[in-house]
Image (cartoon, rainbow, N blue to C red; front, side, top):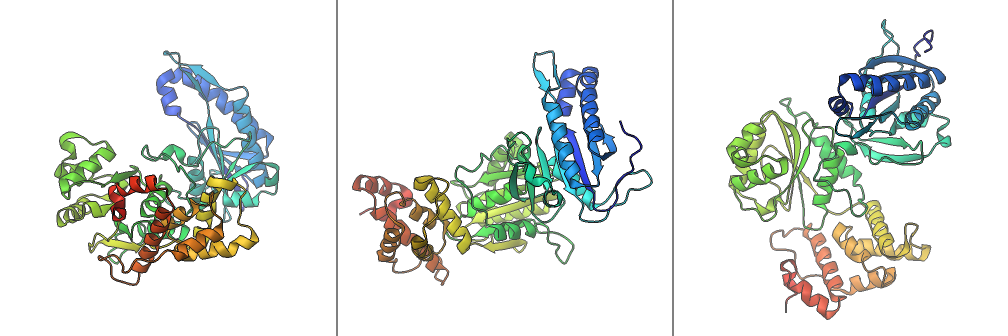
Length: 479
């Protein structure tokens, strides 16, 4: 190992590395076998890469390395060398049950935004150091994650394959960040932070179109200081059906994974009785709290010291004074529980931050229409032709950029042209009056959704119309 190198100064690039599942491997193999068969050869290979790439080993903590570079290009090259050296040949050991364990390392790279100077111990401190460590923690074994500043600073980045991941929430940092996965062997290891994703999240079946402004607004509410020094604990996304409330809340929850020590959870309130015991039971199921511990009062005790985020979906199903009062108890009798509620109406509590949701922006709506059309007919390269763009704009105007209405319109693109879709939606009469529970101008958007439902329903064959009409949610079509 080269020992006469000096720690770099200025806007340096930092690498953090760590072995995935090191604690589990140690427990399975025993301390001595793990140390000699796994940890020791791992250290040797990383230090060989450090020596080869003009870098400075700042320190090690267990199996984690902190490495500093004057140039981002050297950091990228070193990270790739580390992964390739650990991959061929792999470092493995077999435990007493016959299971083979393999050393896999996650690597985070970050170029500091500020000038950094080493201290008397040749170490570095500050927000950039903390951020670099958080970037590493996003990765999975075998993965290299670079911050946006490291990616931008590296003149050699074009030599590598990359996967961009936008809107990553990084624990202890307020703003969402773009990070880059360096595909050192041409393969992506998946969404950064995916090892944190909760069991209830099964991924997006169809591409989700980020609603960046709304997502940032929602998540930032949880960090805003109030006049008394506290931060909001209850945020409600409310609006008419079809506006994408649930999917938006799920996107926010997944984006916030890692920001809450005890996790994020999704609680469906569909078809639940309007009682605090029913809501407590639903929360208990989501958090795997069972039996007497899930009774409403006992649940408050179980959650009193937890730092977590719960999405309570479809609050209108349980909307009542009994449940609202229980939510107050849930927030006032716990230390760090946060609630993200979706519903057609707000919960109507003084401690609530309310975010009304209507249609998407024009850009988001167009992206959604194109994404769904690609699924149905033209493949991943489809874009509206120049002579179709006017018809697409008209479709978005007629749907009021409501996500469900856009999905309905795009569902017919395999059978009709964009002009035919726009003309036929326009020819469908609007309902005569807004829904009775909301006699305001905002209700006109809901009328646009009903219009799209009517138009889409009328295009179905008679047998399909009959089947849908017999479903409770389509009862309005019964003759």
